[in-house]
Amino acid sequence: MEAEELRKIEANVNLAIEQLAPLSDVDFGLNAESVEWVDGFIERQRARPGFDPEQIDGLVGALGSFLGACLVAATGGRWHRPDDEAWGVLLPDGSTAFPFTKVRKQFRAGMEGGESISGFYRVAVGYLATGKMREAREAGAGQDTTSVQRRPGRTE
Image (cartoon, rainbow, N blue to C red; front, side, top):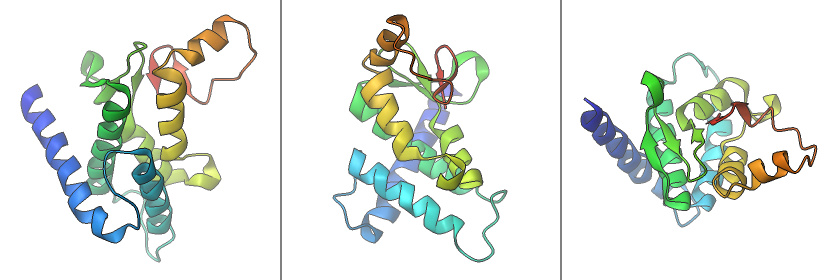
């Protein structure tokens, strides 16, 4: 079952790249520039007349798979499903990022609601995967990370 689900994720990644690369003005692939473009794509979809945030499962599947694959490529992490939860990316620092959850949140609340997959990507790659977030917390840097981690080891 797990292998089949991972194959579906990979198929979604390929579908996202195949469908979005021709629409974008960037070197579209598993990189930060493409995540930024997809962030804008989500916002453009949200702005369309008749957009229904409850009818987005297909987009969440494809874009969440793509975002997760970008995290894997940037961090050396791997797909992981902890305790029968949703699929996520296990990062090198031991935390798990949940790209499907983040994509759904951005579709529902948008950037004006504080949701951004590119911000999520930057934090996961630049701070969580490297352990810098944990170091800052342990050093008592006073940085509020509640919007980044709901509980230790989980990033949404």
